[in-house]
Image (cartoon, helix red, strand yellow):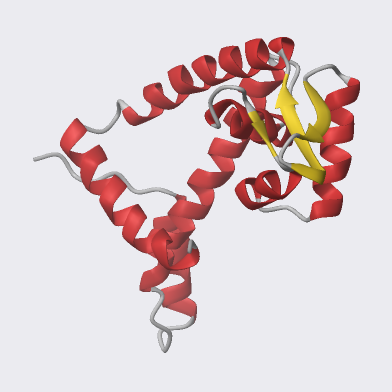
Length: 166
């Protein structure tokens, strides 16, 4: 059986063990790798979105609307909940996306004081293309692991993340 390759995290953990043998640095083995992987994913996703003229935050808002299903609309409050930003930030984001013609804003037919944000045809086309390209990139990354390991990793990460998500 081939030896497990070492990486930068192994070297960091070894250095901390050498310098601080009194500390249990075992969490670094997992969480430093998760952190580094997240950084690589952010960069790769940014590249994928840029090919479609999008920033990451724009993709987040457009994809939330797209996932909502027909008629591809949500209230600003629903967008805030799905993208984990403040209402002021969301107002600014919707304004910027509306200026680009990717969303429109209109009255909520069920609430005279409410507003609905709707994905435009152009916005839907861009988010659909960006999502398809993103999945190709992410599939290439995950293909390094057998399907059974991907399934185990999915479950482990779900259990680790679930306490943070209501």
